[in-house]
Image: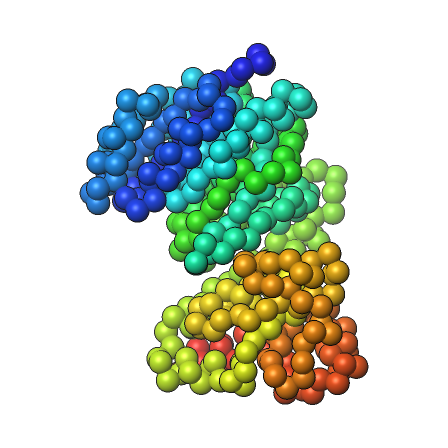
Length: 371
């Protein structure tokens, strides 16, 4: 690869008038200059095309026409690329200004075939959660690569194929697992490359995504050779069941009457300000459930001294000994460590009415499922 490889960026969109300009500008304003930008619009009728037309002269290729879904649109874009490296940026997302420069440096330094990096998930009120590097071996269980940060050599698409359009929500996961099992060399860049605005298609189609992800996992696990597959298959199934249950929780919240919602909030919070104990994955799940219930999270608590004093989603992280008994309702976020966390709180003098586990919070909500 030469020292100034051409990078092709593809954006697919449909009816994205509110966000498409930020996406386009984030590509055109990159510190790296040898970029070909391709925009594939799915016959938008909300003004998106008017925005794109303002930048048409700076695009390598642009079309607006009906398509057969997001992956069909991505595949169309891929067929028009002429670059050595390809990234895909959806119309709700945007790159950091030096994202492409950091990616190209990684390709040149490590002679790898795929690069990915940190993803900044953007919640309401521009609250940010950064997704760090995760274990690639867990790709057999689910999507542990942040696809909006992925860049691939064009030769990899040519060798191993494009997105499988039989999938409506998980073709990006299938592609990542396909490439991983083929031994494609992958490098992680420890920098934020992409801002991902919550609420894209795969999130809206949560159950479909979980179903397709399970199908992809099972397909590739069963094709493995010389390894014990049963444990991996069970983990994939357990992960699906957990996602399905969370989908039910979210759906139940969306169907609550105002009176029922008030009852749920009262049972969870005891009409006290809420602190979530634990800032891992389940901490974020707690935050999301509370957000759906319109409950403001006052603070985090965490035993990790490295996190104490930081802000996560713009909310301060305290050491547990800064929580005052009786003044707050504590949500214990981690099912894995909940017994240890309960023991810790009891040693600090907290009563059973001062805290609730994440699991108990879910049970309160699901109790309204059939009402």
